[in-house]
Length: 382
Length: 236
Image 1 (cartoon, one colour):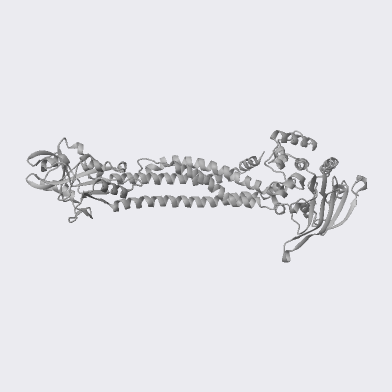
Image 2 (cartoon, each protein chain N blue to C red):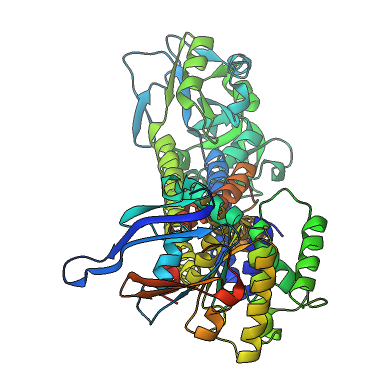
């Protein structure tokens, strides 16, 4: 029987106390994995949702004097005068080095066309991309039945048209695919159509008023993308919508900080509990340690015995805790409406390492205390 | 110091300070020869156990030096002194001090926990020692399954496991009845005949006279030394 044998015998002798230390490490590692995985999954989920919820980069023609508004932000001009951008620029945008970070790219062309005898502004765009980028419009381009237009809520009210009706655009009959719910923005006063249909009705081709780019993704270098698009389109003004980016970053950072804070608190409390438990175990064994020292055990052997006990419990606790942390995330996920669970492998490895390190470091002080026990003093306290 | 295995030179031990200051050992000088069986007698509080602790490298004296096999044990650092205790000394305590969660065999192998011997070799030594102390076949028992006399014999086997030069026994018969006490004394005599040096603390004059020499202690000082002629001590 060696040092390891003595440690194991001690652990089995104090089953309840051993289990308690193991359980604390189990909780620490499990919490680290669970919190990290949930926060990473939430982060990914939020990022995914934000990616889908609108653009964060706007590409418009370079015009100095005029202004346009995007929501309540002043961005530039939608005027088609001066420099212009064309549909062909879409390929240039999609060929930048960071093209994989572009979640969706929406070409937008604004023009007016006579509709049921009234001059109404149309927004021509890629309808499939629009449905992807603005899901809150409840927009289903496949329900139009071929050539169709979608009416803004105010346009629908003024024209008295609803889904399934027909309107006359530049004298041609067109189906109304649907009515876009009120957005409180300019879309309420527009008709949305396929960009090619609008080119035909307005007698133009390949004209684009703006590109809306959705490039929100995890750790997305939005400013780098802006810079690359600017490089690809020298005649365009490319603007990032900082507010969206910052909101997303702040949300994600707050989540991360929260998860970290909870994990740190659990780890600190856990470390204190482990330290107290091992200290109590050492105090209980004062006489035994004294005997060991008397019969010639070196201080380092005593230190090894105590640390080995802590190490075995920490390793088992960390391993089992991390595994159950992984499984628990799948049970927790529905409560957070997570569409998919992300288990960062690094977090699992860190949790195992942190559990072991925590157990060992919390046991170090009591282990040192044990190794420095004076055998004579130990017998005296018998 | 030619024939002296142990030489304690002017040992003083003071514990505590101020009002709690106590002079436990007062300039004790003592030599013990190789193969000698020495008994130390004295009333409680005389300083017998403290003297044994100092000789055993467990308690650093306030003054004086202890030489064992010609080297100053308190000149050694803590770890080397632990090695010294493991390799040179075997301790037998009044309360046996066996580990309740270890078997008899594991208890006696404890001093060799880090030695290079294989488990098989250690077990062979253990079996042989258990035979010597009359406990053959009890290797797998736990201390709670032994009588007091048996437990003390296990403690003696543990003390002998590393084949030490010296056995230090602090009232080894204190918790035993006369029959078991005499059995332990017989064991010590036998071990002593094999060449081990033994220092034994005892309250019993009868037990003390099994030694070659009896030293009396009182109030931290040596009162005198008496040779036991019947034992034909070669250390006169």
